[in-house]
Image (cartoon, rainbow, N blue to C red; front, side, top):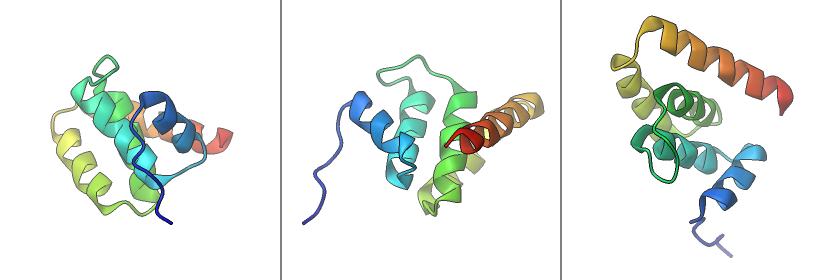
Length: 89
């Protein structure tokens, strides 16, 4: 049986804490667009990076596009945050 669509930010965050690639990707979209949260490109890149590492191909593309709009320092910070998240989860 297919899992129902995860709609609330709280449900997405819960699934992301378990490392679900689709939930990580959805968090990236939320932060990239400012949907239900303040827009934050560093956080969006972090979530897209984590989703890509878990095999989400769309996240790879979104991460690349987002990186073009960010400074090198912002990308490095997003990568640092992704490593920190991985170490904690």
